[in-house]
Structures are given as structure tokens and as C-alpha cells.
Image (cartoon, rainbow, N blue to C red):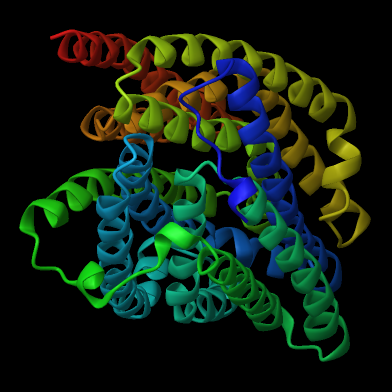
Length: 452
């Protein structure tokens, strides 16, 4: 296990960032694989209405997931800084306190999710014919919030230590489990959309246990009861100041997505299904971006902890070029192969299938062309977060929300219903402009502080 831990304060930035991101990328591919398989099984076996129900639940589900990922990734920033500075006692306390905070947060989110799921679906004007399935899917997924929190926290701990391989192995095991259970629950047991949700949660539980087993093998993470005590107010405050803005940022982005979904719901079930098919590929489009982002958080955090701000600049430059090249390859692949991939999600009458596929591909093509913007967003935002500033990324999240909401309301009026496809691009662009300006301000401040 120790061989998987990586000190990112020494060596060539480009190779460190890419080699750290690569296993995360493969892990994300497996994670997206079981999301895509969920969608394929539901869309093909249960039809357009079930696929639309998944879409209606998407942003509500993503909001909870985003809050969880924001909290745990924020906690991981402090862990990376303590590890980079070789303060192992502080590292153990950071991990212990993060575990307790994550557990308490999971209980709050579980209760809030169950309480608010139905009213929000009604508020979003979810079509009656898909409402019950969308609600059922959310109810089951929200029951599993503690499981999702556990996986994301444990993976965040491992990534903070430079270990991208163990989360990869966990995701491979989870993907295989999820695909097998999808087939069993939906196709054999005929459990419908509930079976797809249950398969996902069981797979997440297995990946959590896998990560926990390997963390227990790390010698310098042998905890005592005092590591879990919440008595150190300064430590708690640092964790919350890092995690809360990132969670809030993701929640705001999700609310913007719900506004988009509200408008999409008014365009009918066929449009919802097409929109959903492409949204399920959204994760595939940003697989590498997310992986580079995790890599940059760890890289910037460890180097800041070690006082190596010069390496942060070099790393960001290298990461931007790597990310741009990757985004162009993915964009070209999706433009040429997108229709073939999307057709795997869609069933129904020939007319329904044809209309749904055209809507999905139009949306996919627009997102693919603008993909480099999203990749620069991830690199700059993650570098800023890794340097311990989670406020400016929050500001970018607010800008993303505003741009997405305004574009979703106005563009369909000017460009008909297809105008909604550009709301996502406008959101990326608004956030990226703020993040680029913010990055240069934060790195200059970090350099001046370490030069004193």
C-alpha cells in the first residue's frame, strides 16, 4: 500500500500530474461505465418514460452528490497540505475530525433529501407520467447517502496522500458489481428503476469497504480516540472553511441545473429523454477534467504545504496543456461517434427513437465543441482550491449559476427550445473567466507569503 502513496513536491510537474490523474481517469471511466449501463438498461428495458424519469431526478441527485463531494474534497485539501509538510500527527487529527463531520453531515443530508424530494419534483413541474418513478429513484438513492459519503471521504483521504490507484481498483470492483446487479435486478427480477438504484448503492458500499481496508494498512494512519475528538475548534473551523464553500458551490450549480430541468420539463417527455441521454454522457465528457482536477488539488496542496509555490505555477501550466489536448481528443471522438453511443440509451417507436436521438446528438455536439472551456475551468478551480482558497471558486460557482439560469430562461425564447443547449456553455464560460483571474491573484499572494 505504501508504494501507492506519492509525494508530489519533487519531480517533473507534468509527469506527476498526469501519472496521478491517469488511474483516477480509469477509475472515473469505470464509475461512468456503471452510470451509463444504468441508463442503457433503464432506457432499453424500461423505455423512454423511465429514461425521462432518470433525467427528472438527475439534478436533485447530483445536488446531494455534489454537496458530499465538495465537503470531502475540501477536507482532503487540509490533509494534502499536512502530508506535504510532513505533519503526520496533524494529518491523523484532520482525517479523524473529517470522519466525524462527514458522518453528521450524512445524517442531515439523508433527512433533508427524504423530506424535500417530493415537493421539489412538484415544484419543477415534473410530468405526472414520470413523477412516481423519479421520486422512487431519489428515495432509494437518498437512503444510501451515508454510503456515498463514506466512499467519497475515504477516496479523498487516499488522493490527499497521492494515491490514485486504490480508488481506481475500488471503482473497477464497483463497476463490475453494479453492471452484474443491474442485469439481475432490472432484467431478471424486473424491479424496474428501483433495481437500478439499488445496484448503484450496493456497488458504492463495496467500493467504500475496499478503500477502508487499504487505509487501515497505512502505518502512519493508525488512529487513537483523541483523533476523533471535535474539541479543537481551530481544526474544525479550518475543515469547515475548506469543505463548506465547496459543498455550497456544488449546491448552487445544482440549483442552476434544476432551473434548466424546470424549463426542459415544459418541452415534453421526448425532449426530456433526449436531454437526459446526453446528460448521462456529461460525466464521460469530463472524466479526464475531473481527474486532472483531483490531481491539481493534491499537487497544489502538497506543494503549498512544502512551501514550493514555484512548482505550483509550473504544474498549472503543464496541466492546462495536457487538459486542452485531452479535451480536443474527446470532443472529436464524440462528434464522430456520438450518435452510435447515444442510440444505446434510446428505445421506443421508430418516430420516438429518431426524435429523441436527434435532440440528444444536437446537445452532445454543442457541448463537445466547447469542451476545452470546461477543462480549463477544472484545472484553475482545483489549483485555487489546493492552495487553500475555496471562497473564489465559490464565487465562480455563483457566476456559473447566474449564467446558467439566465441563459436557460432567455435563450429558448430567442433560439427556440434548442437554445437550452447553450445554457451549459454560458455557465462554463462565466465561471472560467472568474477562475483565471482568481488563479493569478491567489498564486501571487501565495508567492509573496512564502518569500517573507
